[in-house]
Image (cartoon, rainbow, N blue to C red; front, side, top):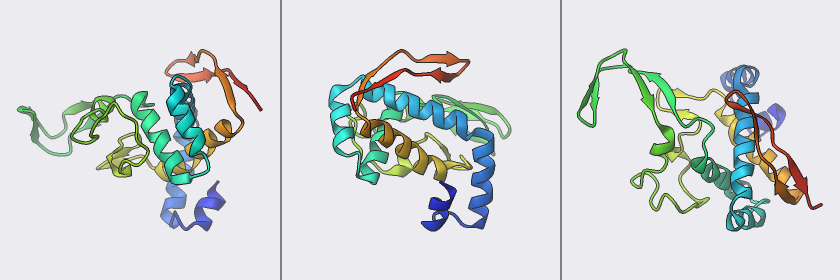
Length: 183
């Protein structure tokens, strides 16, 4: 994976260092959670499953479908941040250093950012998604996620998912998601 990212010139030297660090620290849980939730969402919606299968060999559209599925069931529905400066949000005063809980799941259903938010579309702007942070704190592994998650989902979809069982959990992370394949 790192070789493919470097060959595509997706990462500079600093990006390689940050990405390797991110892979060691958080990639496994993030990837496992994201892929499991994407597959569960796809399996729960026959029309979505058909659309994803039709676009499985189009890297851009497959990535878009993955992002859209994560809007339905994000791997990080809430993130904790610390205010970098004083501001106000919806008439609430926030002081520098205050802890702020950002409900990313609600934000990604905001019609101003995602017109017709209940309708899944793989062509939405990548920058609108909050799955892997943004602003002052983007995920160090976002380039890996953008490559790895659709690659894994695509591999499973290509095998012909026949059924998806009930996800089992180890704390906040999936530990097991039974899949049966038709091929």
